[in-house]
Amino acid sequence: MADSQQDDKNQGSPSENKMTLFRDDRSEDIGAILLAAVVIVTIVVLTMGKNPSSSNAPSPSSSAATSAGSVENPPASSRP
Amino acid sequence: MIDVDFFKKLPRALPGLALIVATMVVIRYWVEPWMNDAVLFGQKGWFVKVVHLNYILLGILAGLIYRNVLFGGKIPAVLEDGFKLSRLFIKTGIILLGSLYTVQAIVQLGIMAVLLIGGFVILTITLVLWLGRVFGLDRSMTGVLANALSICGVSAAVATSPAVEAKASHVAYSIATILGFGILTMFISPFIGHALDLTDLQYGAWIGTGILNSGQVLAAALAFNPQVAPGTAVSIAEIWNIMRVISIPFAVFAVTLWYWSGKSAEKGDSTTAQRKGLGSLLVEKFPVFVIGFIAMVVLTSLGAFGDVGIKGGPPASETIKMLRLWMTWIFGFGLVGLGAYIDFKELAQAGGAPLKVGLIVGITKYVLALLVVLLIRDYLVAI
Image 1 (cartoon, rainbow over the protein chains, first blue to last red):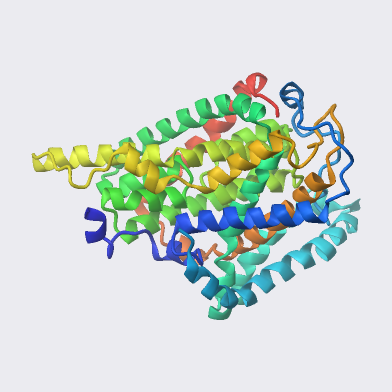
Image 2 (image 1 turned 135 degrees about the horizontal axis):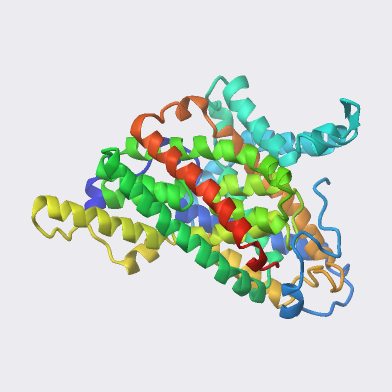
């Protein structure tokens, strides 16, 4: 297809190509999904047994009632 | 599908990665606490309360100083691969942000976001195509600029370039224009938001619509309110931004049609070789990290990580608390890297007619988004 014929003059800016360690955007997306999975598994393992028995998922109606910027729990602080 | 070469390159990324991590550790453990206590002009915490400095802005500034001051405009080769991981961190953080939403909230917020984002994408593309003709811009340049200004900057410019036969210089001009404008909006938006006393909901909707680049939307949201929780600026802005990112294949398709219809008319033929169907564009250009984000929303909605700590409900689980804390670090790492990719010399590339079109459209979109959000503020759905 035409794309391959124009690879030398197209394919984005040089600076864009420099912005990732991956082959392309798609590979970077998959890398992000894998890294997120690793983070989640690590956190789940680290907090195993620390969670009190919960009331499962929040009900949809209660989520909609949440006002902007206000949560009952103080969210994770911006500082460690 | 998995990029095996990445793992071979990873050891070379460690020095740069170490600098990014060390920078964020210093900022969060020493600089930020110092700013909270420092007394300036007779006010304790002046940096935080008046200038609204926080770890996000400091991280971007640190990256910017590394590149443009300490390293003389170019990241040293030994550190370069580490800084190339910045977008990976930002995308990973956005996937994890899915833990702030439930499916119901996404649907409720999403309808409004789709309407607003869709309207702005169409309006921006139309405006750029018209201004491109008025200013006599090259057709390829106009096509790239249209999607760069209407969707999410860098990714959209790169995604559009092969479809409209754009040269590397077209993409570079577009990226320089949107990054230059975006940097300005990234730093001034938190001040405007605080000055107008916007809520997180209004602010998030505004910058999610009005700021051009995904990384800058994230930075501006966290600069306004560094908290990561349901209902905070980052949770609103990012769902707006996700809607915009999803529209990349559709916008590429629309601009490609415009480009080749004009081209065919010029040539007097019906060249179809370079056209692609919407289906193939969806497969090629769809940002698949969005699938990770959606999976995260579904898992959270199913209670996989325990209670999320919404108002009126049970407190957040330890898993959710730790997840949100780690997210702030991951975003911090990504934004130090983003700062290091702001090159003043590259920004100087932008100029002439593309810059004029970029500024006219960028400012129009930025101001119009604020006005629209203020007009519809009573109809915005909180999550």
